[in-house]
Picture 1 (cartoon, rainbow, N blue to C red):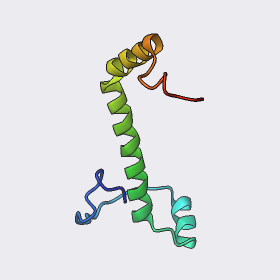
Picture 2 (cartoon, one colour):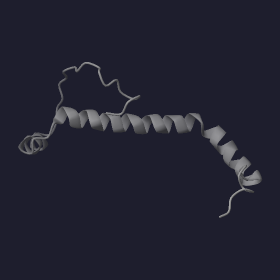
Picture 3 (cartoon, rainbow, N blue to C red):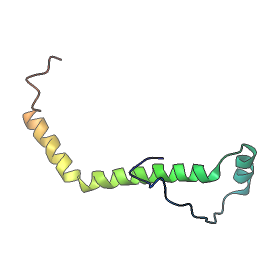
Length: 82
């Protein structure tokens, strides 16, 4: 599990969920670990949400940086050989 986003040693907590009975049947037939699947899916969802939130919080700074680069280039423009 991704470190930094989730405390790996956090205790487990039981919860009740309602899911489609046919999906549950198929998952059990295939021995899908539902707890692990849910945790992995939540980590990915939260990672995406955190990324979107960061981008929105920093949108103005990113736009300003991009304008500056478009106008002035980057510091290494004179050093690149490609």
